[in-house]
Image (cartoon, rainbow, N blue to C red; front, side, top):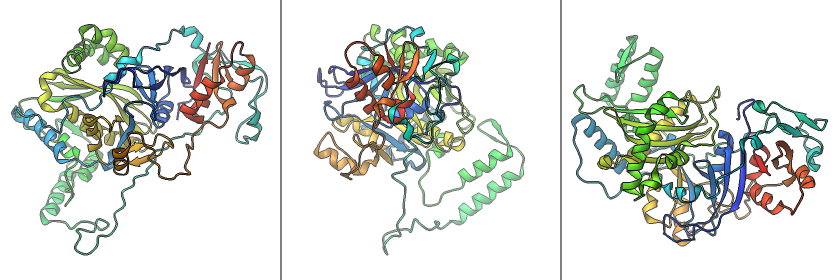
Length: 527
């Protein structure tokens, strides 16, 4: 889905790191992962990588070695469109509403709500910069594409145009790469856990396959809303809405009889005129060229330091402006706009929670072709009574549903990693329905099917079909795309030119981890 003429992803693969300290079980060398430095990355490539168990921390992209690491980390996604608010989620949402409207402060923080953020990967800070790249920018600017030799099996590819000649000069701003001009879009969202309602047995409850019975008061409510539609404008939360928007509001505000309240019922409710507090959520692109990002940077960085020191016990030198920038502002993702994409575009963003004119929390998110991926959350510990970790996760689920209206493919909320072997990290499983990624076949499996397996073993293959394999696995190593001496070439060409010992084992490992599609689209930097 990369936009025409957009720059390709450029990565430097570091292989399996030595074991480093685990932030969950505190084992000094037990945390094992593969890592690469992403100099730049398209949103489609990153979407495909997280669908193979990768995750980013700043520009460092890593993949736990699942069958060896001390605390296996399974990618978890919530099916945002079918999300069901639990009792404890509703408590958090109501608590926020009471605080905003009446200034009520809850004295008790529920046991079920971890004080820490819903996305815990601060431990990524511990290793993200071990392998920081020292390659100069000029070496990473491709000047040419080498067509001197084609991959041996390419003749079998009927869908590809043959190109002649040796080295073509190309404009580095709109690099046209040697093979497939239109790579297929992999990783279409798997709807493995579709909701199917079987008719109930007699006496076992309502038949969910039939429309629910309607109460007279709901019919009256609907008529009242239809009358509202006759007026050309209506004011909702102080903003003027056009008639077309009213239809959408009407559809969404129809009372869904016998159905629990949605997140929107709690989040987008109008506050009374005499509300004690005002909460505003702002979406800001992570870019020093963006005026909102620039003007709020100092306040945001100060809040990050306050949070890290209070919650994670960091020293001031561990959470200064440089650390904040590298960890939460430096992103390899190239901002991108697509006709069928969300209005804000794809890329990395800070979702800032402004309470009465000051920032009290920031959710760092990536907006990708099929999901909103939560990167990190930090908040003002003075407001921990509001359970901001849970509240922001619920807001991000509501935001995903909102983006889906304009971008139909975008329907999942990725929560990072689910770590069953660490009891305090299991709360992510409470956002239902959710799926875990099978670490061997990369198929999404409903969490209910995974939990019994994880009780028996911390490392599990979730796909129960013994014959199933990784469909995206590497089949042709020669087709891996390489950037060498500012020239783009297939690995088969690079291999013949390379001087010194063979690097085939390393390239094979890289390609098997990123998969065939990404290995043919991304550029693997070779010095």
